[in-house]
Image (cartoon, rainbow, N blue to C red; front, side, top):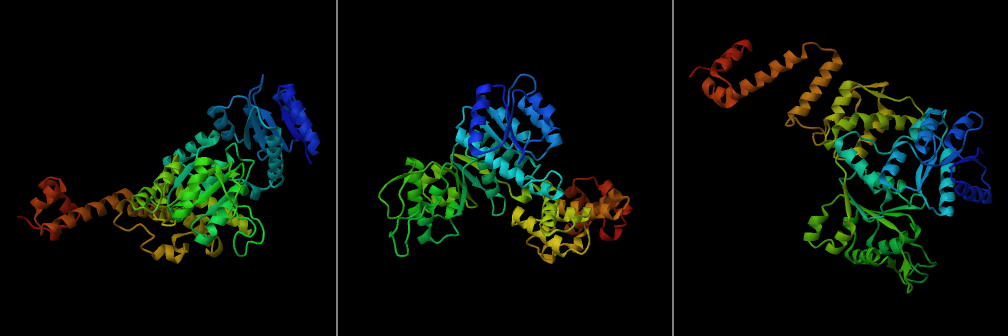
Length: 469
């Protein structure tokens, strides 16, 4: 295995990490300055780099930027004594694997290095397919998604409880994963549980565990999800469906930091960050008495709302390209490409299933579409005929956008004049039908002069559709 590089101008920090890695049997190489590491890159590249952020000469961030140009998949752990948001965000934006504030627990640092080593073993810098595996899990250029990204960055140093709201399929668990991955608890477990998917009678044991003999069938002591997530993050999905009695127990854990296993008598301490998610309106459920108000306020310390895909349509082409690449990689086939018309059509869909639905469509395309270039006719039949899925003609702007995209894709010319003529014709014909052919009244409703209307009727050959008062 290639060595782990330690880069820090502080000799004592290097010594502590060196001793810890020696004890773990991990090969290492140390540098007192970043430029020394850059000079050694061609001789023996590192498996993982753990580097200080601020050093004389080349900074840790500058080193990471230059390293990524040569070895883009090498994990870099950034250390810093300046635990500020700017340093954390700059580190992650630069491609850091993790951010380690000083002073740190050496066992935690070693665990982080081991995790980075495992990550590097699954990535090959020469493999295009591995680039798919290391692609961002959450994509989006829409302003609403950029707000989500900024919130994740701000929360990277926080232990606060977070409530994620959004429709089913909008990516709530992905955001929860991101919050954990960029937190100080990243080296500890991320445990997820869907509270709506587990029967009421079993949910208590799932969450808090049980003692041997606590109930029929409890042959051994079992650790619950709170214990499994010790030191890490517990993600409670669909929290709005949690039974009332368990809401009370969860409130106690969040308030006191302690809980009991089912059938247990000794309190256990929960060192866990809770992230909850729901697609329901918890405010309304509180008003209806279906959700405890005090628990709601405990969970709602910081709220993140994920936009529905129809609220960020500009992200559809980016997401579709990502999912098509991902599906092709999984199936070992060439990547399908959407035509401009097909892209425009997908962008106009309502997507009641949100990002998850788009991913499923892209997987269907990869398996079922006949050619490499995918046209509208190659899309899943239910997508093309389901009026509940497709934006209806009542959203005329979207319908117009799809028509423009289709005309451009066909190579049509004089598109502006043609569509403008159709637009004016529709306005005038409908207005004249509404006024029984009375031009003055129609012109008044349209907000144009009578002479303008008369001229347009002649230009568009609509004289038969109207009459003089």
